[in-house]
Length: 215
Image 1 (tube, rainbow, N blue to C red):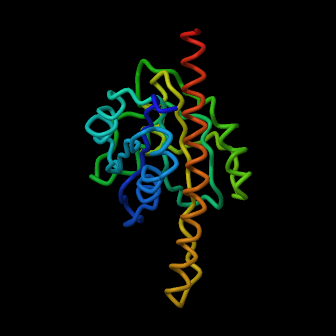
Image 2: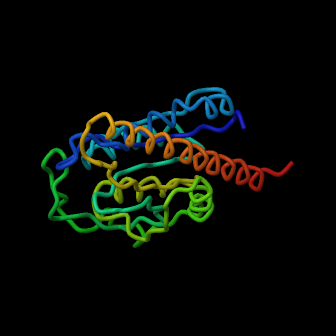
């Protein structure tokens, strides 16, 4: 599987979330020894500014490098479990400004794009997450903010792509060392499971290549 290239995407801070765990997860996945060994190199990792401008300045240059698969991770404030996003909608949020204070001028992300774009890898990813003992479920609503907008853009590319929404990290209260220990355990469990999801995307990319270019 050394020929495949993986792009892992997380996000930076945004209003009400000064520390975004999705960026931490993205970096940890990219540093996975398993992925480095299988790919022969460290996956490309991008932690995007939580701003619509970052789609053009940060995400699109990464996609232009033609990764074979894309794994995206964001945080869902109200989620109680991991959400495997099955689709992205051609819709923006006109009431919730991004981290730069900017609001989209229109409800539609792309005037000529379809109403939605879907991922074919969601079911296999959901099975993998549950095998790790994680509470995960499918979702048909990636929101109307940057997570949805970046996912919609990534799904325009003809390659396996998937977005995982994580809940906020647990905060069991004091003492602080117990809180940090519990958070570390959660992040470790998520990292192991998400690496397996990344491998599923890469396998799908290899199978797709074989179908397009049979021996």
